[in-house]
Image (cartoon, rainbow, N blue to C red):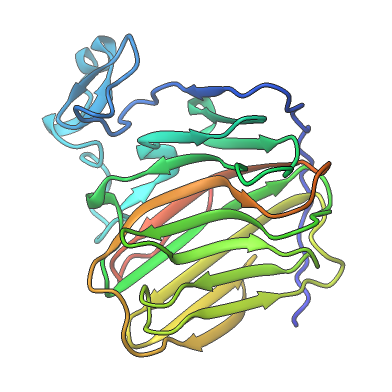
Length: 281
């Protein structure tokens, strides 16, 4: 495996005892009849805005939240800081906080993994913000407050399929390796399972992960700007696109007594191979 040098940025651990959700609306968060805006904002053209923001000319051009951006060609389908999430999934003895003042940063924590209910995620299930069946790309930052000490597989991001399984699943295993998985009958007809060790392990700090895939082509995994793998995608795969994106603690398969806290920021999704995802803010 290739060594990767990073700069460290320590994040204070949040004590996890009670479950909680904070999903305050950032300007332009997506909304519909089943995902209403919080008090003080209303749903206009599919996005949450306050009266003051509307009086100030938002949404730009009287339309979607993406309007008014520089015309620099194809744009990402979804950006965490701009579009936010449509909901959360929070199991007992866990918490997830979505902070709009920090670009909709997701801070997730669980106390332990003493049962099968270890999920604390922010979720996106708007079809128009998710990639299709031909091409996709997911990029963003995970911040670990302490060196990894997992007793089982911990998943922090997944792009799920409507019929079950994941087009893409990102996590760490009990040996402290980065896991990148695509289940069978999603991206390809057969499963793609890869793990990557890092010299010195994954300590406290920031890591930028970038995974791009093309049906009938390759899946490319990059960590902090260093390409780790470019692997051929098996023939076949699902005929319907991904159904939802989940960021946070998707699952943790460790034994009792070990919790986990992490944060995720600057994540972006693209569904067009010509889209260039910018630096993670």
